Image (tube, rainbow, N blue to C red; front, side, top):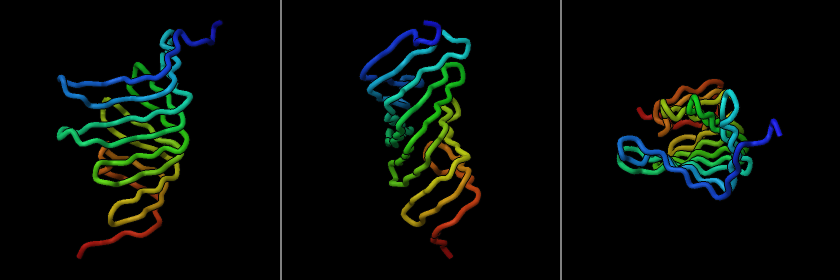
Length: 148
């Protein structure tokens, strides 16, 4: 079949390292491999859990109902009930998020909710590093605590 995946896998536990340091761990119950296509990708139709490790080995977790990983670009398209929970207890919720693995960057132009210890913000369009520290957020509403 022309549109069939070249491979299927159950119970995925993929580890991504950089200079012998664990950077990310991708977990999923099912993966479909379409790497034989001109723009190869892997599809995770039953969702993923992505664990991201910082330089101090702190963990942040990403959950999504569905995901596609594009082999050539290192981009992960996360869809459906996307939740990002950092080790510092910040939580981002959105229907869709992209994660650029090479740049370690998260972004979306969908609606989002960001909850931190000092704020609860709703908005549309979100750009941040994987720790949710360097942020650009547009079309905001919600409550933010401001230090004097």
